[in-house]
Image (tube, rainbow, N blue to C red):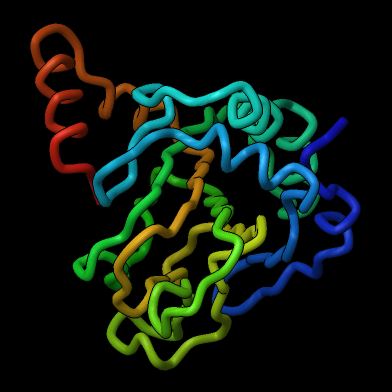
Length: 209
């Protein structure tokens, strides 16, 4: 049985400004959220970590498998009108944010569609809610703000105006980031040999942005 509410995904209206994007509250079904959180990776530092570097339980693994499978890719292709056949996926996981996170930025041109899913049951801080902004300088001038809770999904297609960020927050803010990317991004980011060993130790020590 699917952990995802695909009917809500299909019903979501594709917004066009400043980029193509959708917001789907409760995209992860409420019945699956507790089990996913129980099997969530045991991350202790702020930052995003590649899913292949983490250990997690079977329910979280099942979620990753469904998210990266061909059925969901086909649904994203139809929703965004974009052929993703030649673009592999990257997945990173976050558990904590620090006060240094959230600066406005635009994704790399190597990222075609970005997906964010949030797993906190509640969120009471004024910061930490992702905003799609109207510029790269003003975080308070935004199109939409997304609470990081209850399996909510935000997905957007990268363009020259797809700036996003969130006001400072600290603490546990569980999220998954998935990207369809150009193959050269995978080759460029994949360390080998001693570099790979040092890379993993570095990530475990301090986390990544």
